[in-house]
Image (tube, rainbow, N blue to C red; front, side, top):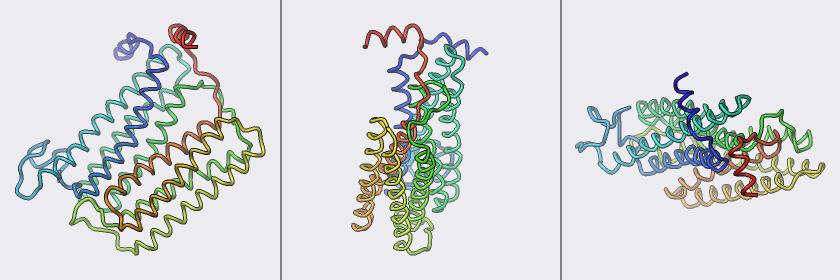
Length: 322
């Protein structure tokens, strides 16, 4: 393959480069959701009312009697950020591919890397549907929810660059493995409920957007109740960790999840009490991304796949750094 031969000519990426690319993927996948919330709370969701063009006949914002230029540029800027996410996703694939050329057994690493551009393309399609559907609340919910597994997979990719490809050896008691699965399921249930609350809330992305006709008080209580379920499962998981010789790194990740989840719960309560101010909405979306990242990191840290193979040059670099 011509492209593979081109990738093979690239320098072997150091551990620092691999880590930087994967961290960029985590930030990009989480960040695009936060910037999307900014578009929503500023009412700029239909600043560019067509797709893939911004306005009919132009891919960039132009003066239009029915459209405010500021809202056009806010929405257009968010679309431009998709280009940055695509670039980072491409770097993930190239970096993982270069590693696999040196170590052919690293197929899992490359598969994880390919989920980044594949996910971005899916998001672009969902984003286009969202615009064409005039920001119907359920399309906005799908647009956000489609990004959540990409954040999770980006964390798994970061871990994959640092570990080998041996069969997973769990570092936690057997009962904890099942609870960890329940914890992940509870996390996504909280996220889904959050998008439903948003669908009935005041920030629809455009003043004329149709909203979900449901009592927001009830929806908020369901959302909060599911967070309580998540925290209960997290507490049970901690009790199960006490039954075995759990490594300290797992306990550190577990503690971080508690800090992030409780902070997110407090932020959500304050946000609701203050009438859902715009700035707190975006902070709450950022908090959602941090919950995903910390939970995924706990998942990754609860198992071991052995050390990552290194190239001779990388081996020398590691020896020098030690």
